[in-house]
Image (cartoon, rainbow, N blue to C red; front, side, top):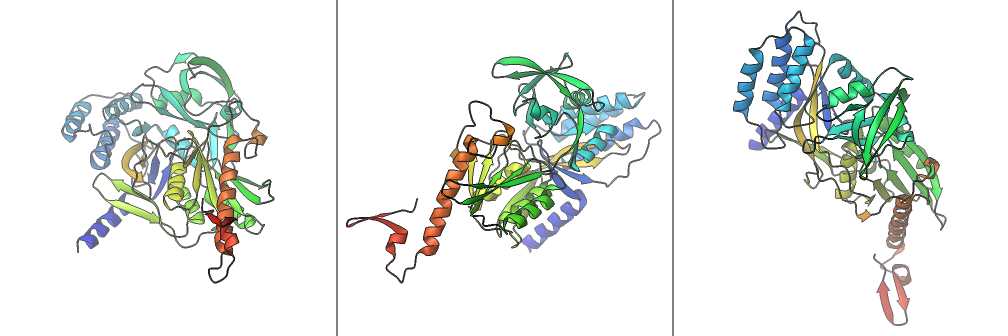
Length: 451
């Protein structure tokens, strides 16, 4: 009876809160059009109160510092003031949200809200970076540049700090302000001051609108003649799952012995896309679970329709965030493959994107996601099975995913080990005397090759 009640609660919560989820480099986001956007006639307090009500009802506090009594007092204070225009109201909302101590609960003006919708559709406007504000250091941190964008081509890297934008210091600047300065008309330029490795330098980048193809692939041949399917996912946007399915179906018609899935520098994207792609590799088992502030847990599992069961290695690094970590965690915890590279970014909070009454939007943290083993990776990331540094000297873009790529080379080596081990096991017949298939014989000593 208790389980039935819990199931009903979960279904009601999901129905009310989630139309679909997306995990950006910041976290998971769900678009919910429960309020049709309308233009207000000087009712700026209605927008403020709308934000307040959403936070009061649904906010998941990851820091442990949120007090509802204090939030109630804030409502009284902010609604007692007068607001002459939308700017005053929007500034008040940001000031109110700053009390949550959560960089991922953010207010988006109508233009920014609309831009986020466009971004998840597979197009990007700007220079191709996603940023987060470190609440401890107050720094604006680049999660990762998107491949093929001006930022990527200029050599911007994950965890670079932005010190200034067009000579305007970012000290004390919130994400919305930074986004406004970075974005602009196509063809114009923006100058960023970057801090990396104890030094600062400037980069002048052209703003562009770029349609990103999420998935790219090729067939590599190992030194011993095995064919390796190399697949790279740049972002989990609306097209990624379909592109991945088409790619795998094509590669499965070839004589592929195994796969290397490259999620390095992938900042995230749609949660549903990451789940669908995980299911293309994982036939059964838990993919990911989300836990709300009320303790309600929703679990996503494999659907028995995996497209391949061939050996798999996943490449990850510091720029692999959010949705990338969902796929990586699912593959690792289900023992479906090995992770090679560097520790991932560590973004495990789920947010819901709400349309406000004037067409603006709010991303509010409503849950956290856990890997299949129940691991909370927020701020901690996922440590790969085999840690390998990237090349000390930069390599060319065309060399990524080749043996000139140090992390790829290590991944290929591990994949070949798995392929050989699987072949040995499949060839072993316990009813015969072909022990030489399953062991190395040296005189009278048997040395089993199980590693």
